[in-house]
Length: 321
Image (tube, rainbow, N blue to C red):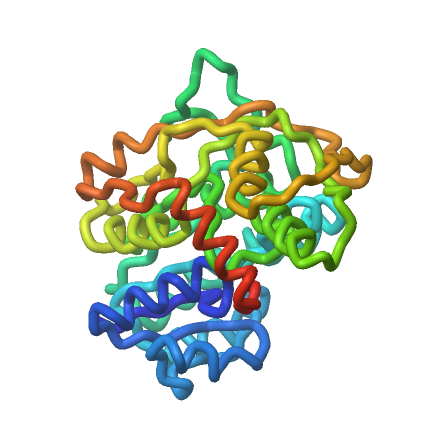
């Protein structure tokens, strides 16, 4: 099968590309800047199948889709860091919402029979009352953050194309995920980088943190991309699926687990610049619809996820989106 992955050089994109290549698919990718051809070639991706395009530029996206002629398109490209989206909401909206429109329009024009999997975000749900958790897909989208709003807009655009645009579109709403290769501006990787540096004596015992009380639903990125594959293969056209574990973990518990794995003593210091003005206290998802439709279940234990994250940091593995 010919697969096209937008954001192929990102955190989840690289893991997804590796899984697609391993199962024998012909993998094409869209990325905004050059520089990752060699790394992706190491995953089995033909450099000639990598297309440079910014998803905010409609004609560049159209040319890439025309060249790839995909049978399935995984739209992962995104402005993905919530604090950065808060600082620049206009760019977040252009990339996440307008970029989604451009991808769908290009598929309609050049690969109208392709299935398109659009990756949204659980941030689009916003603050959900405790009695409505774990969150199901029917929960209204009421985002608190600029990032969540931009992903909610993308979700609605994808739903409109599924209902009235004549495309075979499925949507996923992943909750938090982490694992080897994650950028250090995401919470689990940020902790891991600081702790490994401390263990090597490269930084003082002081560990800079934000709010540790929120509860989130974390998954391993490798389980998440397996869910994307399962939805692309077996999900219902027009449907939307949460991608999550159904287990809530406080940020403090994640930090404590990482400290235990690295084996260092630290002084925890809350820094004001790491706090968010609007923080969702708890967000846990319900994966029932995904599991029932596709047979997907998480396979990687949480402690293994954290251990693999630490090992990648210790090895100096590239940190990607």
